[in-house]
Amino acid sequence: MTWSRRPGPSAGPGRGSGRYPWLGRLLLLSALLACAACAARKDYNRAAEDDTIEAYERFLGKHPGKKDYSARARSRLEELSFRKAAERESFAVYAAFVQRFPYGKFAKAAELRAEDLHARELGLNFYRQLPEDYARQVSPRELPYRILVKSSEPEGANSEHLERNWYEELVRRDLLVPMNPRQAYTVRSDLTLYLRESVIRLCRNPLKQIEAEVWAGNSRVKDYRLVADRADKFLLYEIFRDRELYDARLGIPAEEKKKTEERFLRLRRRLPLPGALALEYELRLGGEGNDRDQQLTLAYASFLKDLKLFRDLVVYPRGQPPARPYPYRLFFRVDPDTHSPSVRLHWDRPDPAYIWTSWNSKWVLQDQEYFFRRMTLDLLDRCPPPPPVRKIAR
Image (cartoon, rainbow, N blue to C red):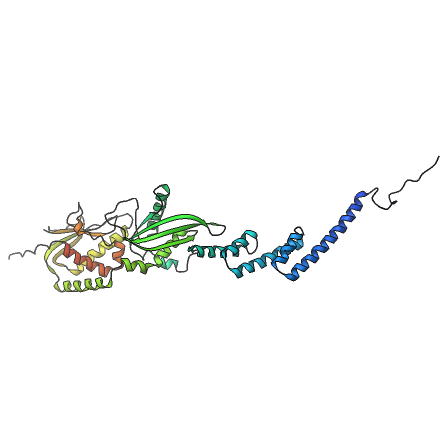
């Protein structure tokens, strides 16, 4: 019997490849990884020495999976790319940067700059926060004009919704003198605002866009185009900020005020006028704008009493007539819809010749001295003279 020796696990050239074949492969893989890490380190060091966008891009193209080196390379690449975008300062460059690094540390700053530049390119005023003078500009004490907000879109549910929302917002905030777009009025608005609302993306986020035209009578005064989260608030801000523009169209000219003052001074020298007159005024409770209407009514009644317009003049609220009847009476009220002061010959029907349609209570109260004098002169111009006071025989 011949015994032969079998090779053991350490025999042969591939030591370890017999009983433990995986050990050789592991050692080979470790050697390859070490070489790859060495190559990645060398390539990264070379890219860092160049410190350019192109160098880091080449490195990442060659070593996309090297966590440590690739993370550092991407961070530096983003920084250099943002610096380059800031140098070029254009919407297209910033937008491309945001698209490439949507979650990077410079993404938000790049997005903000992209929005600003895109808005400028499109001719839009872009607001992110309220201006410091917002509360001072958008004040119920300013802009006393009647305004009608109309959608420039075709008639439909969206159009009605837009108009209703604007009307309710103006009423809620007591701004201007809003006119209901779904109601017919005997007077026309001082300002008509035609607007269109849409959604726009200046970069990534959807924002509301408003395009508006403001008309005074038959004249187009100004166009507004703006973008913001609450674009309606900022449109009001721009309109209120342009008050001088609208005052120039709708305000009372200085020459007209001067003539009124001169006429009133001549009238005052002749007071009290002969005749007897009872002026009955109406006070109402509740309703939109009623506080101003009531304030105007009481203020003008007090003005006439102090003025002593006629030798025999009584001014009283409706329902509290004087002790004796007056042969000549006029009726004063502020219309609850138009907020216009008016003098009538009858309570139950309007007399167009006596309605002061050019003004509203808010406008009058802002300049009482002029308007009360003007209203008094118009009262004498439009109404028949009262009969003379009868002398009682003794």
